[in-house]
Length: 233
Image (cartoon, rainbow, N blue to C red):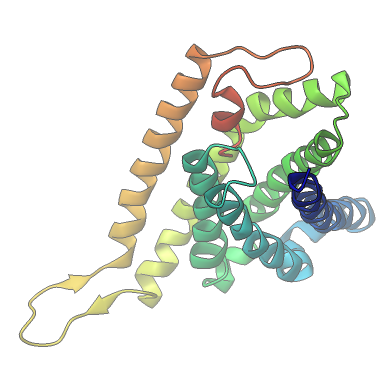
Protein backbone atom coordinates (compact mmCIF):
# COMPACT_ATOMS: atom_id res chain seq x y z
CA UNK A 1 0.00 0.00 0.00
CA UNK A 2 1.25 3.55 -0.76
CA UNK A 3 0.69 4.66 2.81
CA UNK A 4 3.26 2.24 4.20
CA UNK A 5 6.35 4.15 2.95
CA UNK A 6 4.88 7.40 4.32
CA UNK A 7 4.12 5.87 7.71
CA UNK A 8 7.57 4.30 7.83
CA UNK A 9 9.20 7.63 6.92
CA UNK A 10 7.24 9.55 9.57
CA UNK A 11 7.99 6.93 12.20
CA UNK A 12 11.67 6.99 11.29
CA UNK A 13 11.71 10.78 11.46
CA UNK A 14 10.12 10.73 14.93
CA UNK A 15 12.59 8.07 16.02
CA UNK A 16 15.53 10.22 14.86
CA UNK A 17 14.03 13.25 16.61
CA UNK A 18 13.70 11.30 19.87
CA UNK A 19 17.25 10.02 19.38
CA UNK A 20 18.62 13.56 18.98
CA UNK A 21 16.81 14.72 22.10
CA UNK A 22 17.98 11.64 23.99
CA UNK A 23 21.61 12.33 23.03
CA UNK A 24 21.35 15.98 24.02
CA UNK A 25 19.70 15.39 27.38
CA UNK A 26 21.95 12.41 28.10
CA UNK A 27 25.01 14.59 27.50
CA UNK A 28 23.66 17.26 29.84
CA UNK A 29 22.70 14.76 32.54
CA UNK A 30 26.04 12.93 32.34
CA UNK A 31 27.95 16.21 32.36
CA UNK A 32 26.13 17.36 35.49
CA UNK A 33 26.82 14.08 37.30
CA UNK A 34 30.53 13.99 36.37
CA UNK A 35 31.05 17.64 37.29
CA UNK A 36 29.37 17.14 40.66
CA UNK A 37 31.43 14.03 41.41
CA UNK A 38 34.62 15.88 40.41
CA UNK A 39 34.11 19.35 41.90
CA UNK A 40 31.36 18.78 44.46
CA UNK A 41 29.06 21.65 45.39
CA UNK A 42 31.30 24.12 43.57
CA UNK A 43 30.06 22.72 40.26
CA UNK A 44 26.45 23.69 41.03
CA UNK A 45 27.01 27.41 40.63
CA UNK A 46 28.61 26.91 37.22
CA UNK A 47 25.94 24.59 35.82
CA UNK A 48 24.33 27.07 33.45
CA UNK A 49 27.61 28.23 31.94
CA UNK A 50 28.69 24.61 31.37
CA UNK A 51 25.54 23.16 29.80
CA UNK A 52 23.37 26.19 29.09
CA UNK A 53 23.98 26.21 25.34
CA UNK A 54 23.01 22.56 24.83
CA UNK A 55 20.06 23.01 27.19
CA UNK A 56 18.75 25.96 25.20
CA UNK A 57 19.27 24.05 21.96
CA UNK A 58 17.28 21.05 23.21
CA UNK A 59 14.43 23.23 24.43
CA UNK A 60 14.25 25.12 21.14
CA UNK A 61 14.25 21.83 19.29
CA UNK A 62 11.31 20.69 21.41
CA UNK A 63 9.16 23.31 19.65
CA UNK A 64 8.97 20.77 16.83
CA UNK A 65 6.83 18.60 19.10
CA UNK A 66 4.01 21.12 18.85
CA UNK A 67 4.28 20.98 15.05
CA UNK A 68 4.29 17.18 15.13
CA UNK A 69 0.96 17.18 16.98
CA UNK A 70 -0.58 19.88 14.78
CA UNK A 71 0.18 18.04 11.54
CA UNK A 72 -0.97 14.73 13.04
CA UNK A 73 2.19 12.62 13.02
CA UNK A 74 2.27 12.58 16.84
CA UNK A 75 -0.89 11.52 18.66
CA UNK A 76 0.02 13.17 21.97
CA UNK A 77 -2.31 15.72 23.54
CA UNK A 78 -1.63 19.26 22.28
CA UNK A 79 -2.49 21.40 25.31
CA UNK A 80 -0.33 19.59 27.90
CA UNK A 81 2.64 19.43 25.52
CA UNK A 82 2.18 23.10 24.60
CA UNK A 83 2.14 24.04 28.30
CA UNK A 84 5.24 21.99 29.03
CA UNK A 85 7.27 23.52 26.23
CA UNK A 86 6.17 27.13 26.76
CA UNK A 87 6.73 26.93 30.52
CA UNK A 88 10.25 25.61 30.08
CA UNK A 89 11.09 28.22 27.45
CA UNK A 90 9.73 31.04 29.63
CA UNK A 91 11.70 29.91 32.67
CA UNK A 92 14.87 29.12 30.72
CA UNK A 93 15.04 32.02 28.26
CA UNK A 94 13.07 34.79 29.95
CA UNK A 95 13.89 34.19 33.62
CA UNK A 96 17.27 32.42 33.79
CA UNK A 97 19.00 33.42 30.58
CA UNK A 98 18.21 37.14 31.01
CA UNK A 99 19.56 37.43 34.57
CA UNK A 100 23.19 36.44 35.03
CA UNK A 101 22.81 36.61 38.81
CA UNK A 102 20.15 33.89 38.71
CA UNK A 103 22.27 31.57 36.59
CA UNK A 104 24.58 30.79 39.50
CA UNK A 105 21.78 29.83 41.90
CA UNK A 106 21.49 26.23 43.04
CA UNK A 107 17.84 26.10 41.94
CA UNK A 108 19.00 26.23 38.31
CA UNK A 109 21.02 23.06 38.81
CA UNK A 110 18.08 21.36 40.54
CA UNK A 111 15.71 22.38 37.76
CA UNK A 112 18.05 21.17 35.02
CA UNK A 113 18.60 17.89 36.86
CA UNK A 114 14.84 17.24 37.08
CA UNK A 115 14.19 18.18 33.47
CA UNK A 116 16.97 16.04 32.07
CA UNK A 117 16.30 13.03 34.26
CA UNK A 118 12.70 13.02 33.08
CA UNK A 119 13.61 13.62 29.46
CA UNK A 120 16.29 10.92 29.29
CA UNK A 121 13.73 8.36 30.44
CA UNK A 122 10.91 9.79 28.33
CA UNK A 123 12.84 9.86 25.06
CA UNK A 124 14.21 6.38 25.69
CA UNK A 125 10.67 5.15 26.21
CA UNK A 126 9.49 6.98 23.08
CA UNK A 127 12.28 5.56 20.89
CA UNK A 128 11.47 2.01 21.89
CA UNK A 129 7.74 2.63 21.55
CA UNK A 130 8.29 3.79 17.94
CA UNK A 131 9.63 0.29 17.26
CA UNK A 132 6.80 -1.39 19.13
CA UNK A 133 9.03 -2.36 22.06
CA UNK A 134 7.67 -1.98 25.58
CA UNK A 135 9.83 -2.97 28.53
CA UNK A 136 7.73 -3.15 31.67
CA UNK A 137 10.47 -1.75 33.99
CA UNK A 138 11.08 1.20 31.67
CA UNK A 139 7.35 1.83 31.31
CA UNK A 140 6.95 1.75 35.08
CA UNK A 141 9.92 4.09 35.53
CA UNK A 142 8.62 6.50 32.89
CA UNK A 143 5.25 6.97 34.59
CA UNK A 144 6.51 6.66 38.16
CA UNK A 145 9.14 9.37 37.73
CA UNK A 146 6.46 11.73 36.44
CA UNK A 147 4.34 11.14 39.52
CA UNK A 148 7.30 11.45 41.89
CA UNK A 149 9.03 14.45 40.35
CA UNK A 150 5.94 16.36 39.25
CA UNK A 151 5.60 18.49 42.43
CA UNK A 152 9.35 19.06 42.62
CA UNK A 153 9.49 20.35 39.06
CA UNK A 154 6.65 22.81 39.68
CA UNK A 155 8.23 24.03 42.92
CA UNK A 156 11.63 24.45 41.26
CA UNK A 157 10.10 26.54 38.48
CA UNK A 158 8.26 28.69 40.99
CA UNK A 159 11.31 29.10 43.18
CA UNK A 160 13.45 30.11 40.19
CA UNK A 161 10.93 32.81 39.33
CA UNK A 162 10.81 34.03 42.94
CA UNK A 163 14.61 34.20 43.12
CA UNK A 164 14.68 36.25 39.92
CA UNK A 165 12.12 38.84 41.04
CA UNK A 166 14.55 41.10 42.98
CA UNK A 167 16.83 41.30 39.96
CA UNK A 168 14.01 42.17 37.59
CA UNK A 169 12.93 44.84 40.06
CA UNK A 170 16.44 46.27 40.43
CA UNK A 171 17.48 46.22 36.77
CA UNK A 172 14.08 46.88 35.21
CA UNK A 173 14.57 44.09 32.66
CA UNK A 174 11.60 43.85 30.27
CA UNK A 175 9.78 46.64 32.16
CA UNK A 176 8.55 49.31 29.76
CA UNK A 177 7.32 52.85 30.41
CA UNK A 178 5.09 53.81 27.53
CA UNK A 179 5.49 57.33 26.10
CA UNK A 180 2.82 60.03 25.95
CA UNK A 181 -0.17 59.87 25.42
CA UNK A 182 -0.17 56.53 27.25
CA UNK A 183 -0.24 56.86 31.02
CA UNK A 184 0.76 53.40 32.18
CA UNK A 185 3.84 51.23 32.33
CA UNK A 186 4.46 47.52 31.95
CA UNK A 187 6.16 46.34 35.14
CA UNK A 188 7.57 42.90 34.38
CA UNK A 189 7.79 41.61 38.00
CA UNK A 190 3.99 41.94 38.23
CA UNK A 191 3.67 39.81 35.10
CA UNK A 192 5.92 37.14 36.65
CA UNK A 193 3.87 37.14 39.86
CA UNK A 194 0.67 36.65 37.87
CA UNK A 195 2.38 33.92 35.90
CA UNK A 196 3.23 32.17 39.16
CA UNK A 197 -0.46 31.99 40.04
CA UNK A 198 -1.29 30.63 36.58
CA UNK A 199 1.56 28.10 36.82
CA UNK A 200 0.49 26.61 40.13
CA UNK A 201 -3.25 26.79 39.41
CA UNK A 202 -2.84 25.13 36.03
CA UNK A 203 -0.60 22.38 37.35
CA UNK A 204 -2.98 21.69 40.22
CA UNK A 205 -5.97 21.33 37.89
CA UNK A 206 -4.08 19.09 35.47
CA UNK A 207 -2.78 16.90 38.29
CA UNK A 208 -6.25 16.59 39.83
CA UNK A 209 -7.74 15.63 36.47
CA UNK A 210 -4.97 13.11 35.87
CA UNK A 211 -5.50 11.53 39.26
CA UNK A 212 -9.20 11.07 38.61
CA UNK A 213 -8.51 9.41 35.26
CA UNK A 214 -5.74 7.02 36.42
CA UNK A 215 -5.92 4.03 34.07
CA UNK A 216 -3.24 2.41 31.88
CA UNK A 217 -2.26 -1.12 31.12
CA UNK A 218 0.86 -3.00 32.19
CA UNK A 219 2.84 -1.87 29.17
CA UNK A 220 1.97 1.80 29.35
CA UNK A 221 -0.57 1.83 26.52
CA UNK A 222 -2.75 4.85 27.09
CA UNK A 223 -6.30 4.29 28.25
CA UNK A 224 -6.88 7.81 29.51
CA UNK A 225 -5.38 11.32 29.60
CA UNK A 226 -2.96 10.49 32.40
CA UNK A 227 0.04 10.17 30.07
CA UNK A 228 -0.73 13.59 28.57
CA UNK A 229 -1.20 15.28 31.92
CA UNK A 230 1.89 13.88 33.61
CA UNK A 231 4.08 14.96 30.71
CA UNK A 232 3.47 18.66 31.36
CA UNK A 233 6.44 18.77 33.72
